[in-house]
Length: 120
Length: 181
Image 1: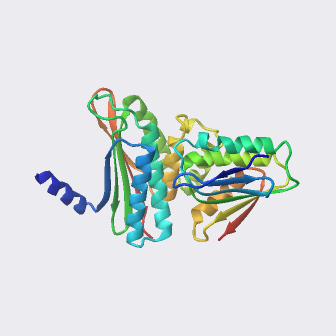
Image 2: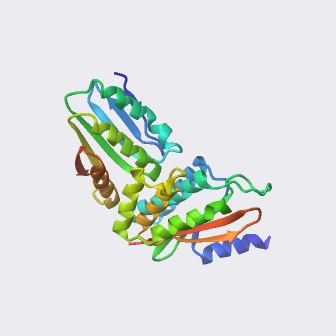
Image 3: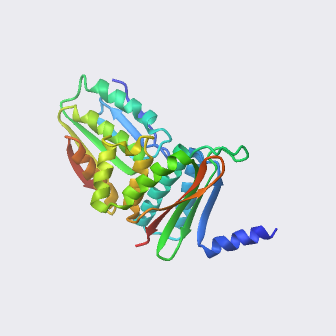
């Protein structure tokens, strides 16, 4: 399966979707000009992955910041992950960042996926 | 040439650390954010406050980029608007002003009044409702959610005003206060 490997920029996150090496990660800052366009390849990739998934998947979110337009798309990504069995979300946040911790809690309440909130 | 001094004096008097007037794009947004971040870093601002100010700035700037109505007056530029950050002893004050069509004024007022009527839990509930797509509050693609986020991150009411302009437009001013510590 193709690998998605995007370097992070000042307004877009780093994204790695690598089935062979079992690395699934979205990290950094997310405030793209067009969040729907930016996240579409991720949603397409997950739709393809869902047809032949690994026995289990750990998906890392290590976001430093995301804007409200991105939050809708992050929910779309989580909704796609909801459909894939044995998926666990590791939601990382700076230990003093209550807002990012709360964002993880809120997302976990909106979708039916196992969440682990991880301060670092 | 006195207007230069006047401007300087006005900025000092109001503790304004950054003003941008003109066209708003994603590139400008990134530059304004970088300047404001550098300013907060240089005074050693606490990381929690910095994050909240950054949050409010992004939503405020992107609202203008995405939702600012083009001025009908042929002399002004597309997306012409103003953005300012002031730093008081007790708070950062993030303000913006941009023209909007008169037909959008009632809707904006409704959204802002609704947001200002809610407490912390009410805002959280509204945020979740909008993000799930269950309400018409953000039919134009997100301005509603941006305002909710600004209210949540600042923990303060959003102050706003409308000044009538010519040709069916009003000037929409918005002020968000982020307390320091």
